[in-house]
Image (cartoon, rainbow, N blue to C red; front, side):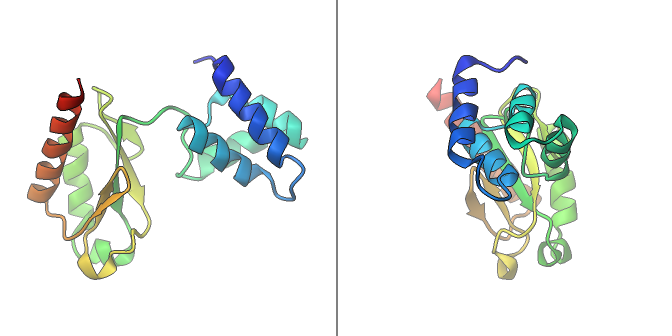
Length: 162
């Protein structure tokens, strides 16, 4: 996927604003992802050159941190907490159910492009575990049945927008 002129302009604007900051790589990657929804692989060489880093160094940071994506996310992002409190209350089973229901692995996107499934490490709902979020809207005490209802509701919103 080749980077568009709009995305190139966004990356260059971020670089112009941040490249002289100490430790600029992570803030740059966060800004690019916030603007574009992902860090396009074709942007990596330009970021690397601006920061006098190798492409491998920039690519390594993008792929090391689960927060960053190299491809656009689905229309909705489902995050399931993987922190200890949620694991103790059934998050592993919830994640397995989510993978089966959405038909994709963690860090993957459903075939229809509707949902991206992401693990999260603490959504701040430890007392109400297991927790998840859909498009940053938190949900607590999520059972597989509640998950299905939330996904069904979100799919209905997708259909209504068409």
